[in-house]
Amino acid sequence: MTRVEPGSDAAGRAGPPVVPAAALDQVTDGMFVLDHAWRCVYLNEAGARLVGRRRADLVGRTIWDAFPEVAGSGFDHQFRRALETGEVVEFEERYAPLGTWFEVRVFPSEIGLTISYRDVTERRRAESERDRLEAQLRNSLRLESVGQLAGGIAHDFNNLLAVILNYASVVRTGIVAAGGDGVQWEGVRADVDQIARAAERAGHLTRQLLAFAQRDTVRLAALDLNAVVTDLGRTLRQMIGEDVALETSLGPRLPAILADAGQIEQVLLNLAVNGCDAMPAGGRLTVETAAVLVDVEHAAARPGADIGTYVRLRVSDTGAGMAPDVLERVFDPFYSTKPVGEGSGLGLGLATVHGIVARAGGVVDLYSEPGLGTTVSVLFPAVESDPALPVVASPPDPSPGRGETVLVVEDEPALRDVARRILERHGYKVLCSPDGPAAVDLVRAHAGPIDLLLTDVVMPALLGRDLADKVTAVRPRTRVVYMSGYAVSVLDSRGRLPPGVALLEKPFSERALISAVACALSGATSGARP
Image (cartoon, rainbow, N blue to C red; front, side):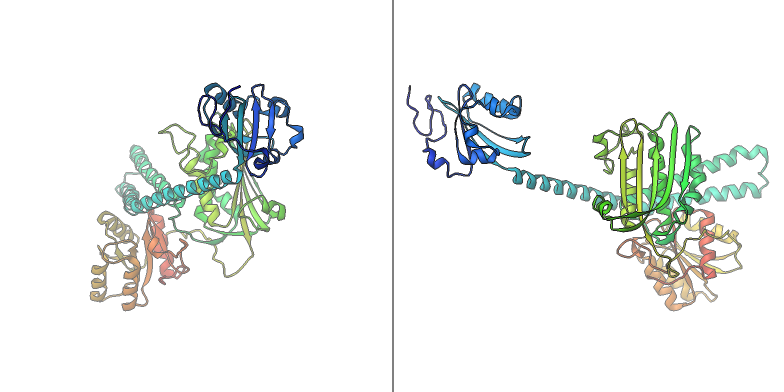
């Protein structure tokens, strides 16, 4: 037999150094030596310990007899590759029985194979955690980019939507005033209504994008979840169509939750839309509410949940259900189950739900199996009854003004004009200004009263909040209503509307505009600035 020098094989290729067995027992890496019959002719102490076996039980046995689970695995493939090529092979593989990752080096030699290996499980876990955090960071940066984009377009886009919505209202009122309320005008009125509905849907999409990016306005109030579901019932029935049966089961005597009514409606609508999308051939959509107690065990299984009383909103469908790979990504805002051009799929809707619920201190659970439908459970923390908590009330019916003077400050000419026309038609005197500095000059020069300042939030030269400070410094009795589609400059650091601030969100309808003005003038809302 040809002698093999240390560090080389018979052909002069690099191989493992020839080291005394006693020395090999001192190293922390495992060392296996296999002959050409795949028998273990040597194994050091570390090698036996790393695979959880005794050395005496392995030496002299073939690797396939000692480790039957290795046959056909990645280890098998790499060992054979080293023998066939005669080259050193390095790889990492998971040893399934122990759940351990090994870094392995295989050296071919005249004897057969010398295999060194070390446990790299902790390193792999650290790398996996690093990859997860990097992915989370990338996703956060993407969300931040979406948020910046949403904020950038929301102001101007909502201005345009408000113009469309309110000019549609002006046109419809004009048709009626001109005697065009007969049958021959039905088609025209229907067209105008379609324009208004399209603007409202576009406004809802913008609000959904802002909510997803956490750039929306949060109005916290003590809510009765049953009342929200009931009020939204008609809209849900119209939205889901005739082929889907809607069933509701409302729990009795629910405690209140502290949340934004509009956002809770958005949660329910998004869950209903996803449920209907999962039932293209029809089915049953069930909406349930209940008071539940989260104990230690349940809290431990739901990150973000604390022990205590919650109010549960559960939406179930009888659709196709979701495969495990889809379930893993349902809250990813950039993942969709629909082809390009056919809507947002699961992503944006469920990502928005998750964001809204998290901001309300709640948690979302989702259970689904292929063929068994999907159930989404949302838990909102219950709050004690407290007279100091704001309550949600429906806006009053618009009532005619009594000659009060309203100063409208808006840098979009078309929106400024349509707001003036609507207010004047409802009995108000209107002053208009295109920006903050001009409005300050007008306030100082105007001899009569100015009962209300209706100002855009985001304007060049002077923001709405700063304008309100200047106006009320001169006229302390003047009330203030802000209007904006992106009201970040009047919100607190958590995106919430401070108490006492009246905000009319764009795009607003004629009814919403008149209601906001009437409420502010009656004292139902305050003109205090943040």
